[in-house]
Length: 111
Length: 114
Image 1 (cartoon, rainbow over the protein chains, first blue to last red):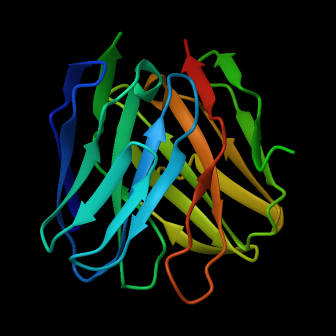
Image 2: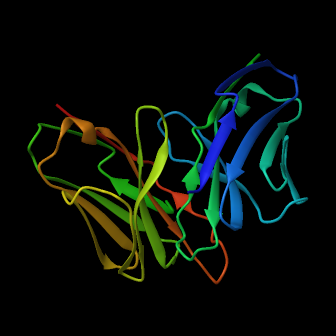
């Protein structure tokens, strides 16, 4: 069964303090690994899709990387508006398009 | 120009009642989904429809019945509501052209069963 574990559960940083969020996964044939951002009371907002080990994608202060067992979401010089829950999800190649999500990392950036 | 919309946003009801949640997408996607997010924030797939056909049906009680009148709409009807059904329900859609289509989520419906 596909499984995703995110760490840490919660992370508090000072504005400008860079860090990384971890997403460990087991999947029977990775079709794609997805990162989403979720603000309180809202739906998940798409950030990145990674397809194969070694791939990297960037958007503003965020960079996502992928290995065969885990993905990292690096946040560089974060701002308070980056505070949110970051969700990682995997999709396998077995035909059905469902996403299997981790429990998320709640990120708080203090000014 | 909302991409994926859901109604209502909040739903408070008594145990034993029947209720429906509606979802519409204007992205032209051919696949739609229902996810449930519990109190621990875990998002879990319930159903998916592709061009009005049921594709995924996870281990969800028979009290939950999705209906897709056309590929832009996917509604969720819940019979005999129970306390454990309290959660946030998200609709999503994607365009799957042979590869992993990105799923876009609606704003969610917070269901509270008293």
